[in-house]
Length: 126
Image 1: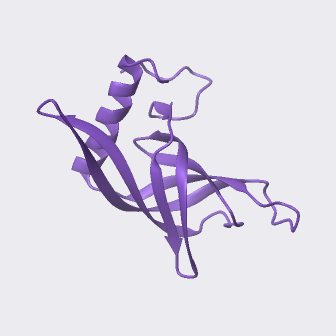
Image 2: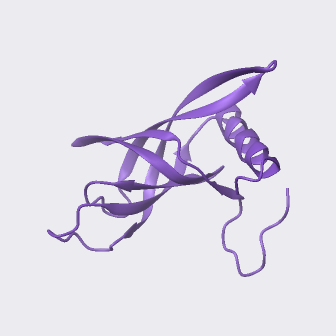
Image 3: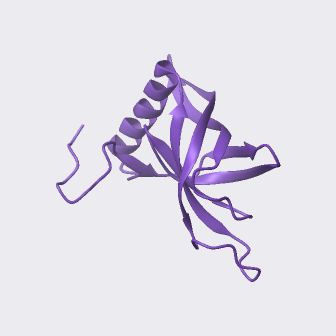
């Protein structure tokens, strides 16, 4: 995989994609889609303000091709909100973009994400 440019702070490639995503914390559960994904986290839009450093449970569905058959892999992991836009809760705002860093994900699940990203780049979906 290509290395990030010196001005790019991210350590992993990401791909713009819309994958089904469940986001939950102690007091809420939301269904959304990813805006982009990397091996280290996801970026998505949610319908409520979620403060930075909030711990989340995530469930995402990754499409795969295994033995020339289309299949899906459901990945359950945890993460923490590392950024949100807008940065403050506002009554007039109905959607917030959040960046979530994976804090607990298995190696095999991270490899599934890496394979999906690599496949997406080869397919020209970056």
